[in-house]
Amino acid sequence: MINRKTLRCVSCGTIVTTRTGIGHATVQKHKFPCPTCKVEIGFVLNVDQKAPNLHYEEPTNAAWDDGAEDGEHMVLFYPEVMIPADLKPPISPFVVTVWNLKNTEEYQKEEAIRRISKDKLWPALQRALVHFENGNLELMKQECQSVVKGMPDLKDQENRGGWILSIMRQFFDRFVAHPQRSEKIERSVAAATNRAEKELRDLATEYVTTGRMIALWKELKSVRTQFMSLYESLLPLLMVRRYWKDHLQNIDGYLLSNKNFEDLRSFYVDTVETAFKLLVVGLAVELIATTGKPVAKTKKGDQDIWWFEQLNNGIKDSHLNLRNGVGHHSAHYDANTDEIVYVKADGAKLVEVHLSYTRFVDQVFEAYCAFELATVFFQWLFVAGGGRL
Ligand SMILES: [Zn+2]
Image 1 (cartoon, helix red, strand yellow):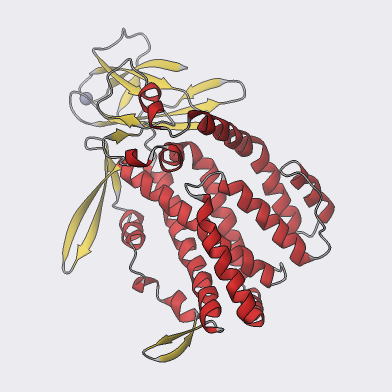
Image 2: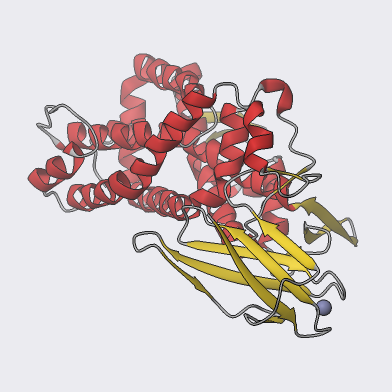
């Protein structure tokens, strides 16, 4: 379904007809430069998916002009798909990119499952988490039964904790690019358990007594809740990274219609920060698996793993740079170039960095997948701590 609406630029009076494809999200945000004077025009479309009903908010730098005939300028928005930059209207981007899929049927089937997962199962899972936190076992089981089949034995806190986290994992595996990557982490945890189970359990107990377990639990929930509400913005990249043919993975030359940098940047910052904390757990587990103790050899002698947590600045990772760049308040979206612009210190100089919007969203999705992978460490630490928060 495509919705047509006309607006007039407040600066130069140019009339532009917007044609907006309606997706599954409750909010769509679109931005484009005025074709005449280059001022950024933006509008927000609220979609009541149940009614269904559309509500356009007042645009920025423009006014709705419903009496107007189609202007000579037209802008098209297609949510939830990759749009080839050289697309010729009225060809739909979906028609052009469908050939990029390895297996169309599989994609469509799994996307349908994700829709149900998001709309129906996710609210049930969120309620189940509340019941777990409050120890309401019967209510937790009841909510989980709408998500998974089968009645497990939930005799103690460790079992319940392990079970609910494994359901979460199964659920979020549907939303990442490479769910099979977690196998390597599972092997590390198994190796750590075999080598020194007591060390792993002591570490987990320390996480519980220092308040880190509950803090991480809450952060995991927060990142995943944000992801679900931003899912439709990230969906085109999930489609590419999970379902497109391997030789078509270059995303340069593709555009995205939803321009919600502000929402995505705070999600990105939270995701990267929580992923770093999960990597502390990961490092400890790797150390236990290889040396029998969660202690690293450094120049200053043996150090326990908490130093690693203090050493965020030392983590040489592309996401740390990007996180600092887009986390700064001066970072912004430029509608004329379709880029994210931020400033980076290069010695004494400040350098402006430009990143295409599509690449930015790809980085956000990549960080989210890395975060999901790192939650596997948390899952097993949580079990080793007896499922206590
Ligand atoms: Zn204008």
